[in-house]
Length: 335
View 1 (cartoon, rainbow, N blue to C red):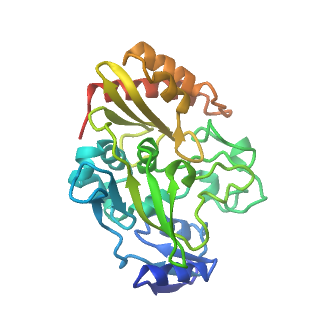
View 2: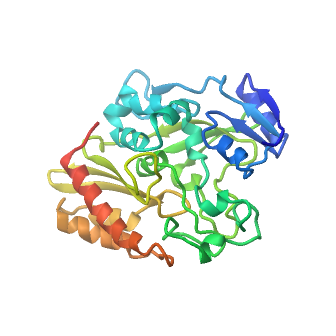
């Protein structure tokens, strides 16, 4: 472990000013990913700014006096608290399912909601500092392109990087059309639609989000929807617990009788960011909620997949996973 300065922030303003004033500083919240990266010598901050004392943990209805409006989830709230909050479980059970599918109970007790969004890939070449990695050291190359790439991307990858984004929580947030609230060192706040929060690798895979330097995630907002009765999070992995997804699918349906009036499908384990399956969503709208239509939608959604040498299986696995997630959502699997 390299030496670093430790600072404890007492308010949001001092926290963001400290980060913007030092390009080699990092925020420290739950530390469930950052500390591992520091131990492996992947991250080398010279200062950690502890933000755990900031008052950014509240979960509240956005519409005052009612639980029927949207929901705001504090950026420093713990994953466990978000998953188990009555308003989340009642109105956004898809988010509860996704959070509980991730990591372990101990890690969820420490990990924060904002930190969850900012966790970095678990690509083994990214963690192995002796191997070239454009994400870790831009311009050195992507070892996974010619290496073992079973766990890597089938959508949105570039010649610079084929790593996948690891969060389960973020896949559900993508399906639920969340927005992320952030604040900068001037006290200005802005909102980022979740679809625009994470980036595809392009020529700069080291840039993983569209956060500006010094910005802090203060809250995540979920708009009101009618998906609670018909949503499901499916996670397919090599072992039953404490494993990242080979493929995951967050599926949500709004029904008018047996016709689909709205559909949301997002996937994890397939791209550098949570992957919205827009073609499948569009195909389902106005259709009967049948297995045949689910299969047509899955085929359309997977049509643009570009598998690598060792992960061709992900195309068929993704196809089947979309169908299964939609079937489970149709049955109604509210937590």
